[in-house]
Amino acid sequence: MEIKTAFGNGNAVYDDSMKSRTAVFIHEQKIDASIEQDENENRCLYYVGYIENKPVTTARVIATKEGTLVQRVCTLKEYRQQGLSSQIFSAIEKDAKSNKVAQVWLFAQDHAQKFYLENGFKVVGDQVMEAGIAHHKMIKKIK
Image 1 (spheres, rainbow, N blue to C red):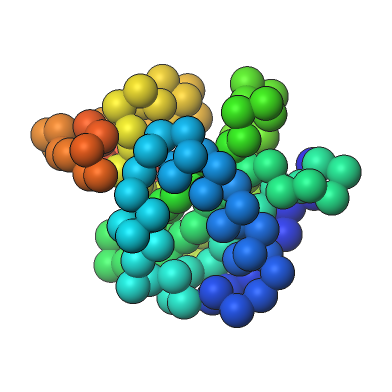
Image 2: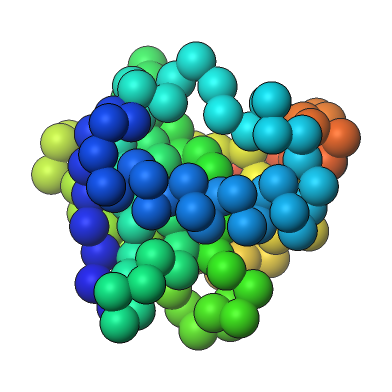
């Protein structure tokens, strides 16, 4: 898999990220399109994984006081269970480490917690609802 990154929302990587996000969050999970995009679209670094030039997995990150916040993680249904999101996270963590960031954190959908636990994240805090879906905050310390 080839991983490309780009900052902000005025580029081809962002457009490819939106293809995956639309397929997974809006069509598959039925999240309202009006809340899937937010005010941070132009302030994030986007990671997109490509197989044969097709965007199949994505995530976005934003720098915060707590560390690197990862959001909008998804993989197209037919490409799941192949370790592609893990590859995206490896790239995110490598970049965080090179920028001397102490931790990566996110709000994981509860049904996806196993994936994050297997990738070294720990659950912290109580359950929160976001877009009608249960989430928990999860943190991974960068070594």
